[in-house]
Image 1 (cartoon, rainbow, N blue to C red):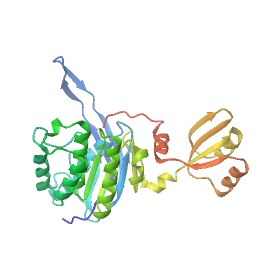
Image 2 (image 1 turned 90 degrees about the vertical axis):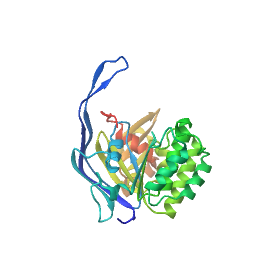
Image 3 (image 1 turned 45 degrees about the vertical axis):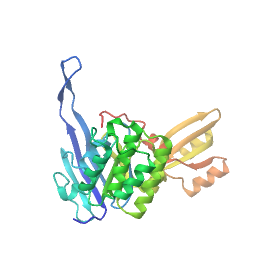
Length: 317
């Protein structure tokens, strides 16, 4: 199997969880309701690109990533992973799964063994593992390899996960909320290392994140999941072009907004600010200038919030 960057395709994928039983702290048995995690999800994760996977809590992101890593099969539809033109079903497929590295915030590590033991394990499992790079990252994040992961702080455990994901250099590398627990300097050091190593060693990277504002500079492609459905999947620049903000007098703004989908509206005394889906025409831009309405871009995070704020997730990831 080639070690070219892996892409991934979802075709009308559904994931449904059955009802289950669990033991409570009181020693009784309680029934956990089942539900739908993904419903007709269709999208592409382009090979050789950094994709931001965005969605509110319970939108279905973790279920989607679990399919890529071969943790389960879809209830419906088809998942394909691999180099362009060679995509295969990842389920129980060693040739594909050896090239997929999923890093979860919980940490897939040997919690009671020292960190060096976990790193040796990954070195034997990942064909492209770079031990020298892993050592540099451990120094950067100040991780003591003689400690067990269980003895590390939450932030250090997250940094250990980031180290594993970067040093594995897998054709498909997935970071599922890996930044949780990291302080701001560590998160930004992680982002910088990701960009630098991605440029030097091209591969496909999926970054699931709630911190859209600080991570959006990494994204070349964006997939937004909402209530188990793929709301959009497109180049990041196309998503950024989806929103336009208008600020000015209520009458002038409302006139320009007519005919557009209004994603958000805020009134500040006589001044109104609205967020529209899509761009203004040249004629509308000229009208905005003549009427004193300020036209601006919408940050990716704000656009994500406005696109998903009208729906509430029903299931947990």
